[in-house]
Length: 279
Image (tube, rainbow, N blue to C red):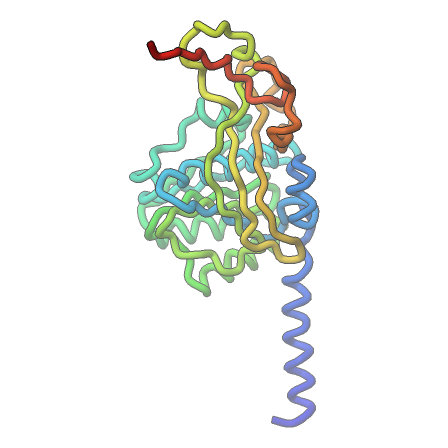
């Protein structure tokens, strides 16, 4: 190979790497330390994967991906396309409209696609990523719906073309999406009680579930850093918040910095534990 050919090859590789290095923009989540570690927020024109570390974490990965889609729906125009493959439906259940409303994603902004096979799932995600004007594209993927290198690259190119926000929630046995600009390992954690439940008396029985909350470990963030972050979705369904109001994720303060009272604004809000002394 001549020196001219080598220079041409180097220029071609440099152009490819340059196109991959800089995202078309970012979508800030509102969790400031998390956004800073990602280089400003979730990348546009690229894919972000939400990966489960254990079987019970798969639903948490789905919920965080959908919460990020709700965030996008409040700050970007267009609808949210959710592509859920058959394996994800069988293992993690159907997408539930009231559940989407609970995390701030109105059903009127959602187009749910449920392909029959893995090839159809990959094709639907690619076509949605290529469609301009969507707020976000969410893939809820089961064991057979992972991406090989070539299909993944086609999705990545489609996302770059349309400046799409592609969010892929992957199960334990889902093949990795190698071109992902950001990879997150997700597991559930206890969230703060909803505002209406923070003043429950101590004898009111078991408290209701807290707000959606996750631990997100950054496995990879091209152009960013790594770290472990606790994220909460503070949206409360039925609280009077408008469906068009943009939600924001937040990072609750460390336990040592939380107010020492049940029902604090940023504290866990659990009623005090009743102690029983054995005779």
